[in-house]
Amino acid sequence: MRKYLEVMKLQFKIEMSFRLDMFFSMLFTVIRVAFAMIVWPAVFGEQTEIGGFTLPMMLSFYVFTSFIAGLDSSEGIAWDISYRVRQGTFTKFLIVPADAETYFQAQTFGVAMLNVILSFTVSAIWVILFQIPIVITGNLSAVFAALGMVILGLVVLNQINFLIGIMAFKFLDISTFLMLKNNLVTFLTGTYLPLALLPLWLQNGMRVFPFYYVNNLPAMLLIGRSEDEILIGYLVLSLWCLGLFFLNRGAFHVLRKKYDGVGV
Image (cartoon, rainbow, N blue to C red; front, top):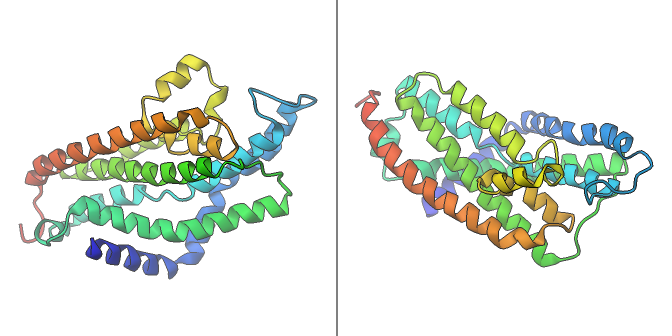
C-alpha cells in the first residue's frame, strides 16, 4: 500500500507543475453552471418550483455536479495505457512488483487531490461572482454519504477506463470506445440535466448502472433530496466495483498475452 501512496504523492507533485493548464481545464467544467444560470431562470419564469426543485436548488445542483465532474480525470488512464501499449513501454507493468490497475488508480487519485483544490476554487469564484444562492442540506450524515459516494464513484470510473485502456492490447485505436463511454456517462450522470426530471421508468432503469450514483445522487443529497437512496446507492456502486475488479483481472490476464512490447 505504501508504494501506491508514493505514486499518488508523486503524481500530485507532477500535476502541480502544470497547475495553469489544470486550472483552465477546470474552467470548462463550469460551462454547465453558466448554462443553468441562463436557461433555468427563463424556464422557471413565474413558477416557484419545477419537479420539486426551486430555482436556488436547481442552480445549486449544477454547482455541485460541476464540482464533482471536475474531480474526475480517469479518462487519462485509458489514454496512458493506450499510449504505452502502442509505444511498447507497457512492459514495466508486467515485470515490476506492483499491480497495474492499482498503480493507475493511485496515479489518478493523485491528480484528483489537485482537482479538489482547483474545482472548489473555480466553483467558489462562480458562486461569489454571480451571487448564486447555494442550497445545501443541514444533515451532516447526508453530506458525508455524498462524499463517500463520490470517492467510490471515482473508483468505478477508474476501473471502467482501465478496462477500456487494456483494450489497446487487442485494438489499435480505443477512441471509439472512449467516445461511446463519454456520451453514456454524460447522460447517465445527470451532468446536464437533473435525472429527477426524467420519467420515472427511465430513472428506474438508470439506477441499475453506477453512473446514476457517481454525480447525480451525491448532488441531490447535498441539496437535501433523495436521502432514501443512500443505501441502494452504496450497494449498486459496491457491486459494480467488485464486478469490475474481477472483470479487469480476467481481461488483463487474457489480453496481455497479445502484447508485443519492448523486452517481451
